Amino acid sequence: MRKSFITLAAVGVAAFLVSDSAHAQKKEEKNITCNAEIKEIDTKAKAITVYIKDGPGAKKDRTIEIAGNTKIQKDGKINQRLKDLGEGDQINLTYRKARELGADKKTFEEVFKAVQIIVTTSASTNAPAKP
Image 1: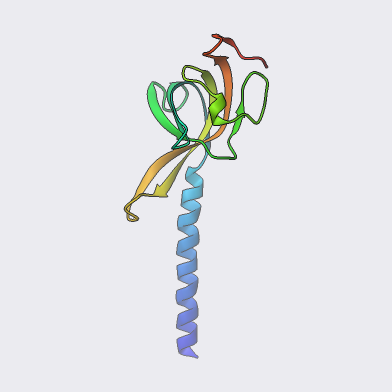
Image 2: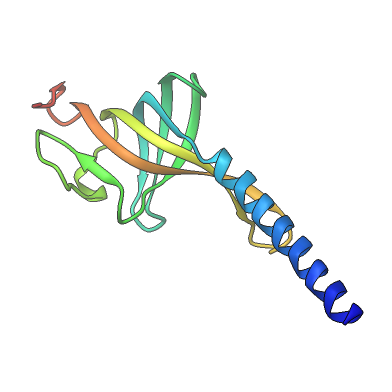
């Protein structure tokens, strides 16, 4: 009886610790919105490098991962793809900062994941995008 109580208590403490660390990681994943310019597009890595013009992280280059569920809007069309973006496009970017296990499987690294991209001025036409 005593062994089962100790085992149950240990399981409860472990579950609490795991949920607490998961909660801390989720807390960090808030959406961040800014205006940016696309500097580089890497279709193989499914990422873009942008220069953040204003908002959090202003005046910095950031590499943003583009997932299949990232909402991309350009020229009034929704559900666009990474290939529809162009270097030099001015965008309104919503992304989230997250921590993921690194390649060494021992350390965490900070990554940026796009939630939504709205092209405000297309570099190919150098005119404001259609609403």
